[in-house]
Image: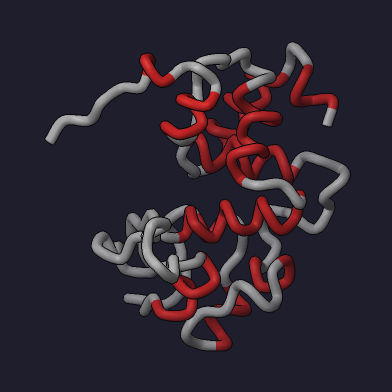
Amino acid sequence: MDLFYSVAFPAHVESLMNNYNIPGLAVAIIGLLVHDDQHPEVQYEAPVSSILPDDFVLLTEETTRLITVEDLSHRTVSDRHEYFFLNVRAAEPDTPKFITRVLPMLARVRKAYIYNNMMYAAISHLIEKVTGSKFVDFLDSCLFKPLVMNSTNLQPSRARARGLGDRNALGYY
């Protein structure tokens, strides 16, 4: 993982963003694993179910078998499901494992581009399973720290714990 700490890292991320049709953060975090020799099983063309056999199960066996790491970026043809969010404060929080089992598909795999944020939950779960780190810790150690993003935190609670709570941006309602 020396690439993360090298001067070539920012150019590498830019190259990945230009070569793959994946939004910035998704390509950066998955690209880190794809190009890391410690995780050879994570490749763009690898079926997600081969990496997460018990965790990544969709409504049909065929869809489960076909969805690749690259497909997680809006090529799964899963509907947007805007009101089906992970509720981490619920008595029984939804999990990425649960979400993938209940989301219907609108077309055959890769036959349409359908914007969907839900598969980013699958990406974060994949990262946690493969690396053994919490997603937030992975981002800190492999993205924020190498890029010297010292005031950047994934969650407001982490910013407050680091004494940066006064820097939290407030959303507009």
